[in-house]
Image (cartoon, rainbow, N blue to C red; front, side, top):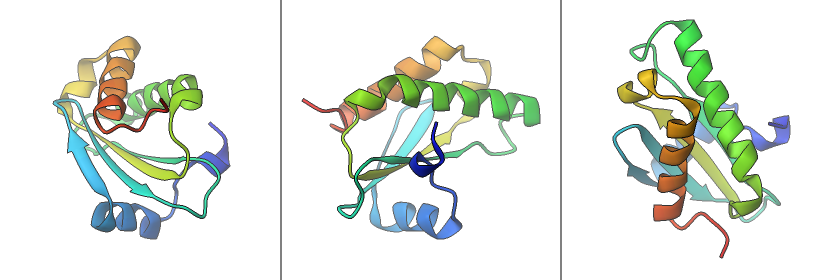
Length: 113
């Protein structure tokens, strides 16, 4: 995923948490905030230490980045999206992570029509 598509700064995460909308399923939590001054969506990923060791957390982040890359054309553009992984993601395969992410984006109407 390109650097311009990532949320890195703490202030940007916090503004999505404070001012954005949220939705969750058993595996993931999504926060999203419309940003009209952007030309594309941006993604921030958060996987806490309770999920597992560094190898496990990095694997989950890789899966999420890859899923966003594959869904890139379908996602609506001027949004900041923050994904927080929950405990069940620890045992999930890539296809299950992608399916869970797709479910969240579909439910919150973040896909183009």
